[in-house]
Image 1: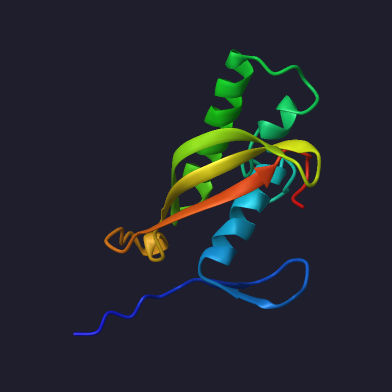
Image 2: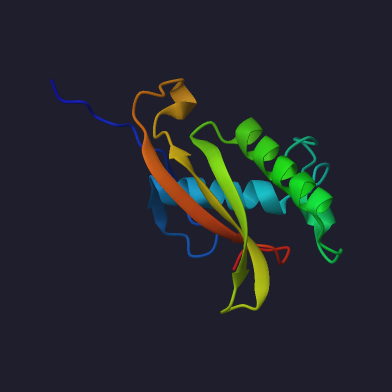
Length: 131
């Protein structure tokens, strides 16, 4: 019996090209993390509060709060990705801090099927917008 995975597809918001699989999730997570709650009129609770941490001194309490905000928003709005590890990283090329995510990608998570899993990670720059 052949299992056919139903990957989600979408259009890239920058180039208009077709995205399929994990790149859709990367774009989705970026959208979640860069949208402030109350920004979208029809989805007032969509987004995350991590942008409120920008420009403030970093200390242990703020890092924990930032991590909690990111994980809670991703788990609420993205059923195909589960975060297992977060780490603050220095992004040399763009000269800023970022958050490195390590987690599991579930291609059929939106259907409630968590049998198919792939390890996946991404890095999100803390500049207020994705690079």
